[in-house]
Image (cartoon, rainbow, N blue to C red; front, side):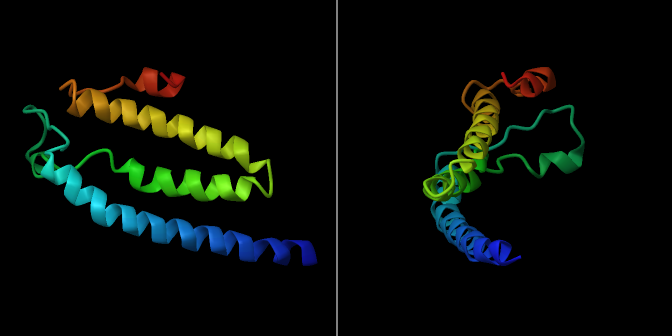
Length: 121
């Protein structure tokens, strides 16, 4: 039982550090993405309610990915089992980044197909 309570302060510290980093990154990243017009394109044939979201900044996953990888990497130095979780998180982050990249930069509205996302490509 004592072993569990010894881990909790590390988990709380990791959470609070990640939260603070995510807030700090969001304060700069969201206005930057809006300034460079890095917004989510909307298809014309979609519902009118979705057109309101047109121009919403994309690549927002970076707000969460950077703190998780940095803080997780730091804690992985203490427990190497965390490394596999960080690698999996990076893999999913890469899929999201590629999907957003295709939508915004390459103007391919569909992005990655559901099959490509599930296969990790």
